[in-house]
Image (tube, rainbow, N blue to C red; front, side):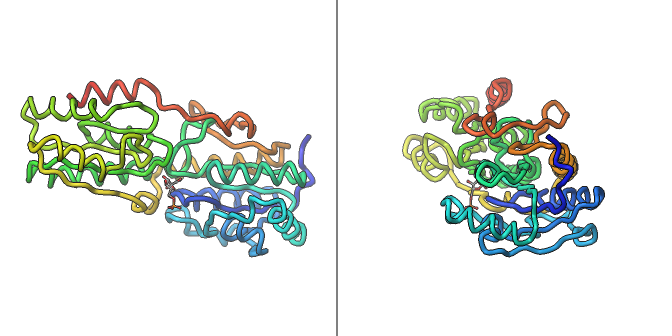
Length: 328
Ligand code: F6P
């Protein structure tokens, strides 16, 4: 079924912000304008939808944002929207504004919210994957991941300078609650001695073995990248345990944290966001609903809610193998 009757598209960002969200908003607004549809920005994700915080947008209102990090629409994680009452309030506000289709930009929680809206109120909706974690199945890349990983690599390079100067071992914690994408690829690119990710069952003993192999071969400094979701302890805990076992290293910890969420999006994220924004609006106008836009082998795809949620975006074994070979 096509939704050629769509007149007013609402766009919002939700969950953790990610560099490139503004480029996606711009692409959605301009594509909607190109097809002579009206566009409304819903502020602060589902929170603003519930409160009726909705503003009219046009092609000119999204000028000068493609290069900016963050999201001009702001973002939030809404508890109230998890309740049927909250969603009803949100839908009533959409109706009041005459919004008859939605584009949500965010991660799995944002897509889940959109899924409920499309099912409970039959309003068409398409999700654009925007999260630095790159943890969504159905797409090779999410918007923001490339920029965040570049930020982590830049940090690793800088820490390496001081690590080398002092012969120190650094534990560097990168974001990724459930996902090791930023860790594995910043670790490979930054030449880490070990990379700890939630997807791999590396034991503490294996970590010790890889560090002392470096000790044996007289490595004087080392970088260990730890994903936030590490199952064998966070960067501080690991540093403490290693210090208890080996007096060889002078150990320091750096937690990169929200630094990774900000900054100008990379060219890759801007182009990805632009392609996905166009695809989301064209998809809606061609009858897509309850789907997430993705990019697979450089081609735009649409995946249903069921094929995305409860599936993990697996890290390929080849990356893990490469990381191990190169860290000897
Ligand atoms: O999902 C993106 C992300 O940055 C995760 O990597 C991190 O665990 C989480 O968000 C942090 O969330 P908040 O900004 O709400 O603390």
